[in-house]
Amino acid sequence: MENIDTRSAVQVIPSPGGQAAALQPVRPDMIEKPIDVKTAAEFLGVSASLVYAYVERKQIPHFRMMGRAIRFRLSELDSWRQQFHVNGGING
Figure 1: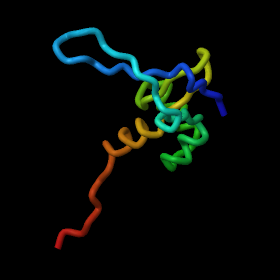
Figure 2: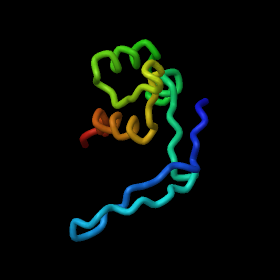
Figure 3: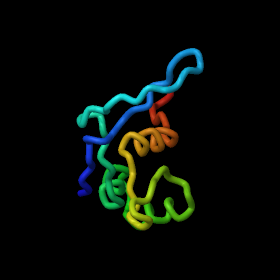
Figure 4: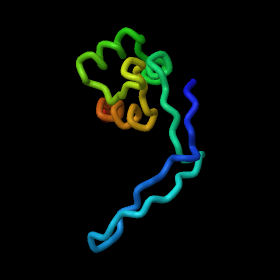
């Protein structure tokens, strides 16, 4: 797992009326830790090779750490997979 320095994390709060934005510290419990390909595959219920294929085709939200390591935010993956939800109820 990556270590995230939460001491320097800030959140940009836009000010009304077009004034300069304010920077406020972000609480450590508000920072979402990135997950790796294996964890993302388990979360989505697919193989890691399929996740790599989605990344290669730019079909899944992801980012790269240090240029190579592929990482995901769980909240983005959850939103992404909701696009494919099908109501499988029986029409009666």
